[in-house]
Image (cartoon, rainbow, N blue to C red; front, side):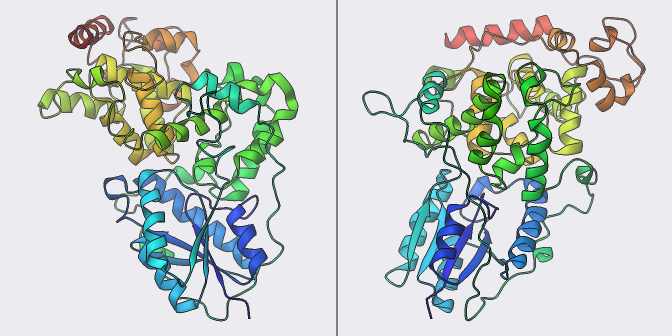
Length: 463
């Protein structure tokens, strides 16, 4: 009998258009495996909101595997050690997986190759991105650092190949390896259950991803304008599905690109995800270190100061006195997600108005976002903070009150900041200055002008 092949799932929890699954299935019996590895990532272990998503995504994946006559083996611990153990006890001679570019996963891949020795081999495939990082290069053969030329170059390689269907069946191995119980991992919060409302907003798994894609396909032509309107539901909400690999980017591209130039803005966002991986592939520590050397000396406020910590807590809790910022932060807490336009406003407010290090915000998003992605998260925060390889200028400071009115965020604020639900436009964008701030809503923790001037003064010290 042909030796078994292990499928090592990570952020690629699907069966359709999944090269590792298809290659393993074509070679013989398979052992699908997911390792909850909190050791290899060290300080980058998965955040609370992502763990909630993971629980249900693994449940959905296991159900699909069982439909094909297979099942998912769960292990907890060092990924290389666990996979080597499964390979040894099962007699598997190959471990199939998709390439991952986060520095800890690259370390795990190298460790696994050593752990397998001569008894088995690691076979890595592409498929988590439109193109693997490093594929698109400049005329001199170097990887791109700036997004716009990266987009133009990658666009020349599109469309991607047709997405491939899942196997019709998966052959079982002669012997199944021991498996943990998913419930024993305690991925779901309970005391308290801060994710109680997540179920109302999300359906983790490939079926949920496919549903979201079809819903978005009907309004994708409105995305260019709709992405800036938080009161409207004109975004894809595909980011957590993409992060966990429940749907391939090729599937999304091929479903939408037929609508022509009307959806180009969204396709650029899909390519931004590739760009972020391209950045962390070049600069693995990008999530913890400002790229621009002079900006590393920016005099951020000291988090050991009680007032600074209080300001940060107010930002996290959505109690800054800026309705658009507070609405976004409360949406994040309630749903594990935040509208993209509001993410930029909230991030800019923390960095510029509060002069708090972008890494503090990145860490908060890492823990609270269901789509927390090392590449996208760090690239986006460094873009806003003006510290990145390709970023906005630090001196460009968003005016959150103006942004709120410009992008018609009134209904969005009413939904997520119930204290302001009875205030009409245009007063809801700045109820304090309009003289109608309810007693239960906080005053601004800093004025826009004062925050702006403090940020510019800090920038002068490194300019």
